Image (cartoon, rainbow, N blue to C red):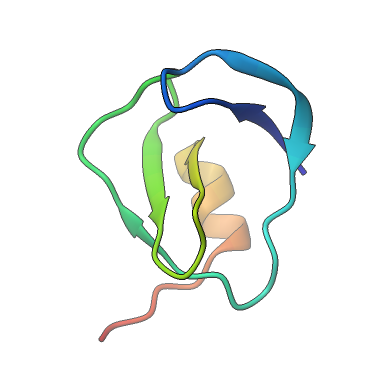
Length: 63
């Protein structure tokens, strides 16, 4: 579970769940200070996480 933010970077008091099978691509901008921004490909979400979290919880897929 991750904290949730709106498209303007404002905190929303709920959490989002990242589910197995969701696909993300690295984005160019960061709104909330995360190391890496991931934009959802097959989901309407974006997240910002640390490099450590990316390495631990995500697998790179080459298309």
